[in-house]
Image (tube, rainbow, N blue to C red):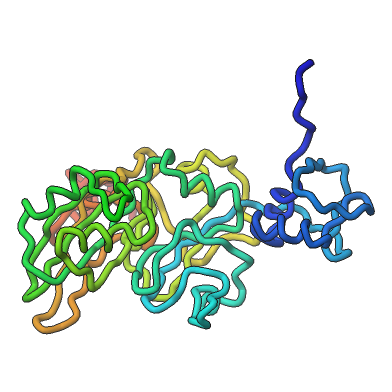
Length: 326
């Protein structure tokens, strides 16, 4: 006799999709006896529920599931990527706008790292994007102390084992030397805890600045530190195969754009950084709008024509435009 899977979804997943808590936190709520189904308290997350079931959390009816949404956030250095920090340090959730709904981070950036961090209100979407099988390349601008040569970086390209943990081959390019420091571009698809810092340290390089500039097709671009931008529903549909529906709560005013007929190339090269002598050294700014996969060195789209624009020809013969009637 075959075991049939009960209809519906696990109750912790349903609570998470309603935006009330993460799936793990929902399981804790269930274990604490705070969740009831059809008037009966449940203490195990091993329960499937359907739309016909009445679910309450702390005796309050569970809200309807929210539409999956995503945001890009330019994380500054000095913030912890966690809801609560045991050491009392400031977290990204202390710095996010108050009008933002409850969100979860897609992956992490450590305390001293900065750059692009994706946020979502949907636990399933979060897990999907974090899986190595998604295949999205994550790119970083990395400043190291020292004068590495291209051959010094070869072990990283072949894969390296640090303290018994094996890191997959990285895409590493040496961009420029700036005084006592060198700027590198590093691409990886797995993203283990402090992977770049540990791998660089193993070959004798100390990372003193690390900026994530892209996560798959999503680009940091010219976003300012602390800025949050919602990703349009159409882009989520194109990149993630989600159904085309309006995002809950509307769209952000600053709307990232994407070329319609081209898929972003996640392995496109990135321009070398620039910096002032004796200064901190800033990475090159992407000239594209935030979140807009564009052409050239940036994933997706068509390269823009360089140089000044010429004068527009007068209307009439040879101009491609009909003459204006008097």
